[in-house]
Length: 525
Image (cartoon, rainbow, N blue to C red; front, side, top):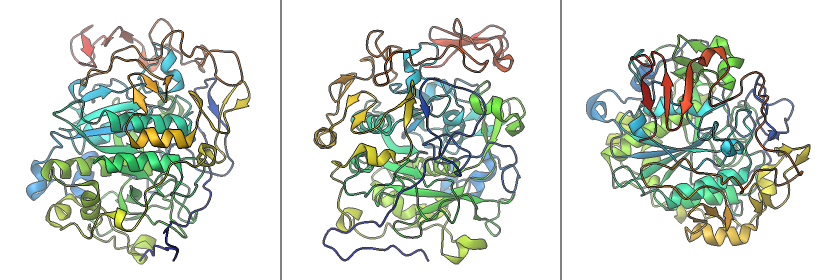
């Protein structure tokens, strides 16, 4: 079994070390906000905790969401009737695109905190393709192909932080988590109970002071299960990505189902990070060659055409996908057990079946199973009995590690956020008081609009005079008009794959999409 190593000191801690950044290794989009790549890591944008879009992932066999639902025991017995109804899932990612397989009534946009938010043509929209793929795993319902998410009755709140190149700073993620905590009950019929973070920082500081892990712990203390991908650097990398390293969050690695729905042949994927010391992977979930929704014209769609499955679907592998499967499974459990705490849901998900072959079997790793979780009894007292909460007053630069966003050849570094100077001690006080956000201000600085209504976020986000130029490095708008041939001009895509599909005010219009020619398709109610 994986052994958790604890220090004998009065303040117990996870043993951790520095984690390399996940660099962008994709053809396509370029925006002024970029991230410094690190040689030798996985083919993923910096910060995003791992996915492989080549179309020929290890094993190569496609796994539909229907098959995955069977693999995780969500289609038999009491689990079969669960849809995630009444449960909100927050997705801090690259945004979502209004593709036909995402039901508009089940999606809400939180603030767009990405560098693309200053362009009305890019705001909220998934220009990379990652967030749309994960959203499809969670709540998708593509009638044309029969593709249905694991929790199709849940409601998803998208908080965009990543751009088409994957550029994102840890301060944007911290602000996004703070926003989720403060707005978790704004939609009373679907309170946010699950937060999906398929994200890993470039650094891996100690959890008892790290602000990223402190933000995740505030969500946990607020009744939100935080699901974090462990990274795609490989079994021998020796470390999980931050915040999957945090002792409270549910850390997720990926299995290969080998093209079957039986559990007998499932095994740990070779790309999943394992920890040589410190916190181990909590659970596994299917994450190889997962077929979910395609985001036409996005970075990964144009960079990896071999991963397309027909017109509407796309194949991706990674701990990101495994995390999304787990977030959806958690939504099913919260529907069935609404009184459960994050600790309790984590406990019953960790009681799934052991995998039976390969390296993961040899160290006692388990795969999630909804049917097993429904009959399991949560084990032990709250985790806070064993582990101290993070103070959050550590350095944000330590969380960045080797991964920095760049503007005009100048890196954002030191104790600065994207929005200005960052005092972690002052932030920690406000975050713990759930007062880091006030309207559209985060830590007193304009970071978004004031239009959140509880059911949707108004189109206003970055004010025209708020952040029109780079806050470090000097000069230049964040949005680059020459986006490798796939740019927005007059609110439409010039790429042929999206010809005729254009954004008009508050809806998409497309000839024949999905049925009536020219009919508008409302996206945000």
